[in-house]
Length: 171
Image (cartoon, rainbow, N blue to C red; front, side):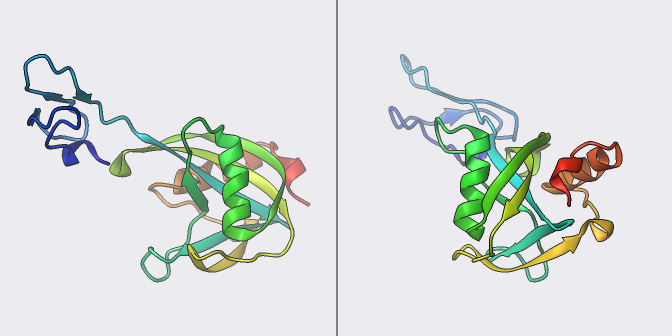
């Protein structure tokens, strides 16, 4: 839920005050109530699945036509982000994660999210779940980052590979 969506206190039902901007806290106006809607970002993982020097990008059924991206999902309460990454790869693609490497942590203010990016060497045959309707393997030589959201994860993979890191993920 975005901060501006909070109009009333979930504890006492009184109105919340504040600017309603992406970064402004909203506080309950009721005397004796101390509720604050902090608007903290939601942690999300994005996983670049690697097999045979190619990266899998998928089309989520909620995306506009032609838009593909890494596998992604929300970190559940109490869950280690690395576990989330492996879980999402299995749930969405039915692939086994052989090796998992953290690429970095990236802001995605537009969605009030923090993206935790991983690269995963995977094995098995792709079987899509109901969230995805298509995918494609993109050769590393043709992979290009985009300038928003999970594009930062792609840029990190390409930069780290150019620096000679992550060679164990590629055949």
